[in-house]
Every structure is written in structure tokens, then in C-alpha cells.
Amino acid sequence: MARDPENNKIIKLNKRSGFFANMNFGILIFLFVFIYIVVALVSYFTKGHIQSYEVRSGSLSLDNSYSGIVLRDEIVVSANSGGYINYFAREGEHVANGDLVYSLDQSGNFSDLLNDDASEVLLSGNDLGELRTDFVQFQNSYTDASFSKVYDFSYEVEGTILKLSNYNMLNSLKSSSISSAVTFYNSAQSGIVLYNIDGFENKTPGDITLDMLEKNNYKKEQFVNNTLIGANDPVYKQVDSEKWSMVIAVHKDQIEFLREKDNNYVCVKFLKNQNTSWAGVHLLGTEDDYTFVELDFNNSMITFAKDRFLDVELALSDETGLKIPNSAIVEKEFYLIPKDYMIISGTEGNIVLRQSYDEQGNAYAESVKVGIISENEEDYFVNTDALRPGDMLIMQDSSETYPVSRIGSLVGVYNINKGFADFKQITILEQNDEYSIVRSNTQYGLTEYDHIALDATTIGEDDLIYE
Image 1 (cartoon, rainbow, N blue to C red):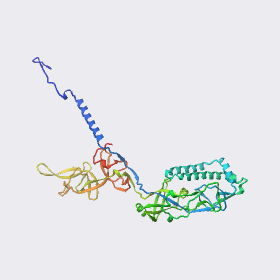
Image 2: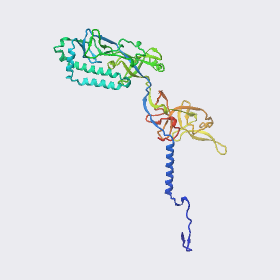
Image 3: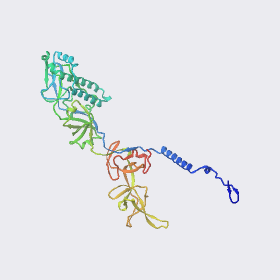
């Protein structure tokens, strides 16, 4: 109600009615924000989420892991007479010509004396370091499938401790009353001493068969301290050359990688300690679907002197670049536009002139911005969203025209750095079942630390990213 001052009348005002009668501007804003949030939540939970992958530099590890058998120039030394044997040289170490290796005692008293005094001997820091290294290497190489190696390792450790003890007590024992009953034997030449035989001492690379490469078939005789031996029994073996070889069996599906390396060199990674070395490659005979390959080395003999089998990885490719998962790779089609029809502008972007008509039917040149994805010597690859098949393009400052029709495909990934899917071309240098190595820092490609869609099938060009 309101009062008219002139006529002194009360005027009845019309009241607003309906839903908006009691609403104000603040409530409208609240409703708008609420509806926006609801729509965003629905879109978030109904749209597939894109997993991203950060591009990093790396190299490709092809399936080039093999287990091979080691062959050396091994000389087996036999005893001149029988008796109880005790070793003084450490297994796997290099001894010089004339160094003490073992002793023989026909009575067994020397062995008893060694056992009685062994508890009083303290191992040096170097001795403990050697044992610690043996334990770490065994732990790193152990698998449940090779549980039998535990027994061999136990014998090796027991023998090593006894040999270390014997060596440390030798000076005092030589002056004892029983020293005259003991015969000490020195090395006749320099080399690495080993205390086992396994039947491979005289094998050559050409003798190896598939059965020999089966670790489950491998057996060896370990020489142990304080055991009774007979005359002419083998007591140790010695390796006097740094040259050694390894034989692996390569399936026919993979041999082509190595055929190019025949009579050449390949980089070998030893999985036991992750060290690498170069090896000469020689292809040998075949058995079933496998080809035997000999790898020749000129160093690291002492490192692997105790090993008959080694697991290695061959570096057959030197390609390095950006490492991406194969699931991120997609092939996409684009229009091919001749370079003479493209106007490159730093301020306005990349433009083509398309022939269009106004309402009166008059022809004119329409500027259309397009995205360049890649190029070759004659054409640009452009996105298909701005143009249509049959569009007539006009060359700048010319009457020549070109109909949009040709299609070209590119291999690439979806870059999602900016919150939407942006196709980037890649050049694949090498590929295995899971990853590819692509060239880095190309004009239209990827750079390190870019983020790409992990699965290219879950995303399309210009899609917004919901991670």
C-alpha cells in the first residue's frame, strides 16, 4: 500500500507472485554455482579418467638375457701321494709360482692340530671382507629354483674359513714337532686356484650341447679340507690365462640380432654384479631351433673364476632417446596441404585461404586458422577439424587453387601438458613388447618431462583431461 499525497488516497501496489517473488540476486548466483558443481561432478564421475605418463630419457632393454656356460684353460693338478689334505691358498685368488697351495699328512695329526687351534685364530678385516662379499653375491643371485646351490655355498664357506684359518696359523705350525710328517706343496706356475672339478675342464665351445646348458643337470665335486685322498687323486685346478669364453644358446627368432655381430664385438652386462665388458662374438653350430654363440673375453677372469654358469644381458642396441610405453602410441590421419598454400604468421598463427561465398553468391577468400602437426618436403600435415573434404584453397597472391582431398597418417602420442589432448608426432627408433625409444627434441615432437596419455584409446584430440 502507498498514499497519494495530492489526492490523499491510498493506492494498492501489485505484489510479485510465483517462484521468483522471494528470490534475490544472491540466491540466483548460488543456484548457478550449485548447478555448475553438479554438472562438473557428473562429468567427472561419468567420463573416463586419463592416466598420465611422464616422458623420460632412457634406453631400450630388449629381451636379450641369457644363461651361459663358462669355459677356461683349466689345468687339473693331482696328488703325488695319499694323505689328509689341507688347503692354504684361498679359492679364486691368484697365486704366484712357488706359493704354498696345500699340504698332505699321512697320519692325520696335522689336521687335528689345525682343528684344535682354529678357534684361537682371529680373521683379519680383509678376510672378513672377503666372506662378506661372498655372502652378498650369493644372496643377490639366489632363487628358490636353485636351492641346491645352498649346499655348494655352505661347503665353499666352510672351506674358505678353514683355509683362512690354516693360512693364518701356518707360521706357528711349521715350527711344531709334527711338521716333519707333513709335506707342503707349492704351485708350479702362477694362476688362479679352484677347489672343484665338474668335467668341463677340457671342453671347448664346440662341445657344448643344450643339455649341458641346463643348470639342473650340472654336478661338481667340491674339494674339502681335512679329507683323506689317494695318490693321483685330483686336489685342485689352476687357471693361468686371462682369456676365457662363454657359450649361450640363442633361439632362431632372435639370432638375427647377433648375426650382424658375428666376428665383431658386443657389450655384455653381467647380472651377478651389474658390470659390463666387451666380448668377441662367434656363431657356432645349431641344435634344434637354437644357435650356439661364443662370447670371448680378455679380462675379468678372476671376478668369475668360481662360476661355471653366468647370467648376462647383451646390449645389442645403442639407441637412446625418450622412453614411452607402447600403449600411449596412436596412428592418426591428417590433411596434406601443399606448403605454397600455407601462410605462416607469428602473430595470427598458421592460415590458409579458403574460397567462400557471401549471401549474394560473390566469391571471397576466407582466412582459416589451422594447426600444423608435422611436415615433409612438400606438404604440411594439418588437423581435420577446421577444413572439410572438397574445400577449395587459394594460393596467396595467385589465382591457383587446391582442393582439400589428400590424407596422410602420422604415428604419435597425446600430449596433455595444457589440460587437453594435443597430438604430437613421434619417430620410433627402437621398440620391444612394452616400450619404444623415440627421437627427442624434434620440431613437432616430445621433450623430456612432457606428460602424455598412458592409454591412447581412452582419449581423443582436444579432449579435456580428468586425472
